[in-house]
Amino acid sequence: MAEPLRNIFQIKISLIGAKPPIWRRLLVTSSTDLLKLHDIIQIAMGWTDTHLHQFIANKNRYGVPEPDWEDGTIPEKGVRIGSLLKKPKDHIIYEYDFGDGWEHRLELEEVLPLTSESITPVCTAGQNSCPPEDVGGVWGYSDFLEAYKDNDHPEHENMKEWIGGYFDPTEFDLDEINQVLREEHGTA
Image (cartoon, rainbow, N blue to C red; front, top):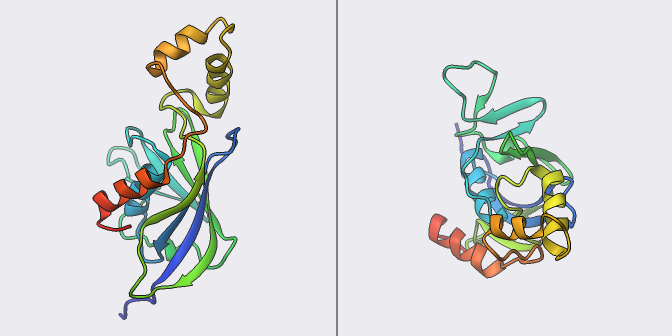
């Protein structure tokens, strides 16, 4: 069987329900499998890969199946993103940390030709910092920000201590993301 044509996919990853909006724009090859895409998303978003995850597409769940629990999860390794996203505006869901329920919408924005000069994976844009791990999902993050930003809030000091002193919800460092992608994947 011949190798399918490879293209560059421009994908926008948006953290569903996050206020302020938290998103990243990535370039990946259409042949990137979901296992590698999971790692790329973790780096681009700023997660620490300490929780379970899954992709949801066409009513199917892709991830790392639990051998002791047959729940219909399809192994993500070897499933190429190009088999799930075909044309611009197609999207899938990436869920990280089932307890906090961080859902990300991965939308194919553009299909670009793969050339010898193409560099992937690479993050080309984004906005705002990744929420802290274990903050309690979008609702917990909203509560956290409210308390953290308001010196008079009864939970302000507790939130500062919990986060380790400093947190900037507007922080986004494109160069740092691409440096880690380059170190982990030899690109960018």
